[in-house]
Length: 588
Ligand code: NAP
Image (cartoon, rainbow, N blue to C red; front, top):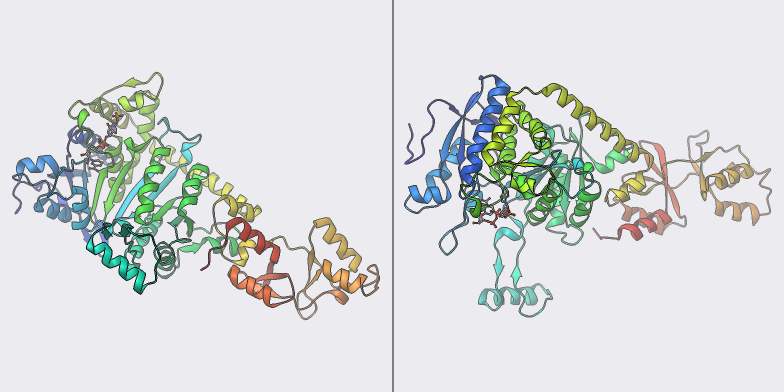
């Protein structure tokens, strides 16, 4: 059946297929693997044993992976007359849909494309996916690394990686510089190297679509669009806008924006809805150190994702155990994220963690979560026993250093020793629910502080307004209303609707003008005689800029904020001033 030269498709299993846009994984599934160069064979051998043991234990023999070895890198060069990236390997990876690979040597010198770039381009693996979470016992520079649990989706095909660059001094550079200066009136220094950053609607949307679908499939709380749109409006800013668009248009029934979370749901996340939010890239680096538990799934452009994924991986114990995958619409290649560490090749020494957890990701991708969970749950137990490879041993006092295959033995022993998966899952779930409640309480009680602390940039009037409405009634005396203002330290109070259902407002300025200046007695004058009615009101979703325009065009400095016919807060020119002072002002 096989038209391949060296690849043998196992006859014992069935291929994974795609049906109606969904992966169909048979119980006897064929999965491709590439051993990799350098330390690749050591870690691959160890991991194949661990994955097989987990699948066997989880499904009692009813499910099994039938491995199909495929070739890239040095092993391929040996078999295919010096070809590091044979066409038949690219073909089989596409054909098998799901595969996993060890690290590969990129041959130095002309004539070779980087193997990883070749794979990415030929299979159109447009999403680079990196889950980053902490495993108890793994050395980390953070105080509470357990709070880090995110999955980063990095766009893999465009941005400054598109390779559109013009070296200074070349005719191409001069041509484009002339065009930019003369036709586009752009200003930049003489002799500048020039690079172009294309970000498309197609590329952005398919990446964000994948991130949202992942969040839905895995019960995640939020998807954060990470961008530098405050500076690069038509590339990074457009990525953000297209991200919100795809959420609204294709996942409208299961997503809400962060603005809606505050304005419509008072900070309490409705069951079954995923929150779509966005953060400026530089703030995201801070947030992943200060409040990592607020983030779940991240969707980023290519360069930001490159930086961010390595920075976050370092938070939970470094690159040594960070897993990854490059995924197209369905075809997925899971991979160790480190290199071939040639000095350790065939020494049975290095940590198999990165490839191991890439395999865990792969099992989850196949829907074999029970097997994936087994590995995830026993791993910290083995580390807690102090059984680790050299890289962790040098960071953990009293640890027992073992080789790659002995580490695999320890994990397999634990897997076979019996793990109460259900009890562990329940404990984890209870912990997640508790953390979620705590976040909701903070959002409910201190929305403004929460916004500032969580790096969110205010967008609408609802983000700025004071939510606790202080009201008086028409029939109260002005003196009583003044006491209410003093006691609550506010400069205005809202007047409850009159018989016609119309709201009013009375301000300190009204007292000065209509009581003191007019020579009236506050103890005998009623609120209804000095209040302004109807009150100027704006919808909660009005943009800050439009609110500023309304205030500028009128002679009042505050407006009530309305939603579904109800007044839910009050916004003043001081609120707008403070927000701009705090967050800066980026023009749309
Ligand atoms: P590297 O292979 O990742 O190794 C750098 C260092 O990282 C090692 O010396 C070792 O640190 C540590 N390390 C890496 N993997 C480890 C593991 N599994 N367990 C414990 N420690 C581990 O990076 P490199 O030396 O820059 O690159 C070597 C080759 O790999 C190059 O040909 C490069 O092109 C290729 N590469 C391939 C991929 C890929 O295929 N995805 C990715 C990156 C690089 P200590 O020395 O401190 O023990």
